[in-house]
Length: 376
Image (cartoon, rainbow, N blue to C red; front, side):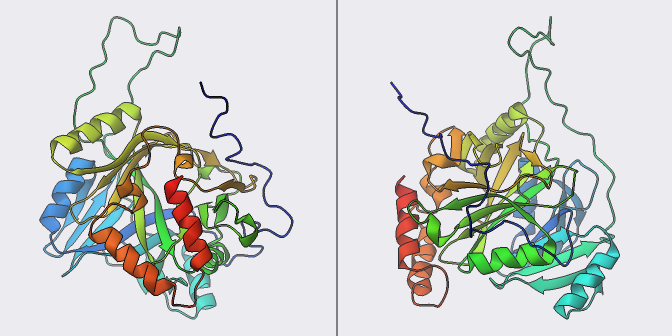
């Protein structure tokens, strides 16, 4: 018998305590309206294209050295992959509301505005965040027309019968990705990096997480959304977490519904791709989720039914724990937590040893807090 809901108290809508981070900048340079795309380098574009098709992305451009992938929603490509000698994440591109925002940001940062290639259209400015990651802000990029969407199933809810004399037989096929939702990044300079994004791009924090027993030291993770005023935006477009290395964690792509997510996952499993964690429902953001690894080791997520917030909500605050990552679903796996034995966990261990000798925010007490989270 369970005497207490383990999720009780994991979220507070009351915002920060006195003196804590407010979760927004008072006078940001600009306010971006969305993620535009993510850029990667990979050595095998054919292999990348095969996984993308199985995952549910559509190729919108293919050359000898470049691959553009899109969802069914109208807009630009959501993933751009260039051929390189080794796999790497180059950085995110955010969409500015209008070209003059790109110019304003460039002037504030002492950078220049550059025209994008003809196949993308528009202009951009490149900045570097405190973690050393290239951050591109674009405006005027050419929108691709919508593709035929994957229609959600008609569901019977309780005694509300919307479907009669008809069966449910969703095919086991690739999920049709609708759009890019968010990217998660790890930084050894979490607080500096967080403030940089809020001040330069006008983002808002939806939720903060802190290590148990260390709230007085401040948060160690934030889920950050775009400020679209009264127009609701995804609970998070960017998530930042403190860690021993500056790196990509995962990116997430929206699909139509739970059946699409589940059947698409079964298709990926049939193709022999590596499942990381899921299916479940998150707490912060509420998304239905399912995580996979692509052949180059990058983690990607199918999600559906996420929260939408306007700019009036204050940040939630909650202690970080492995069990607090989901309302329901299987326990978080060692692969998802980054502690599965292998090359990645070895790289993280070596990064930890290096980070503890450097002047950054990841110190011994933070390491102990992270280890406590992994065991929770």
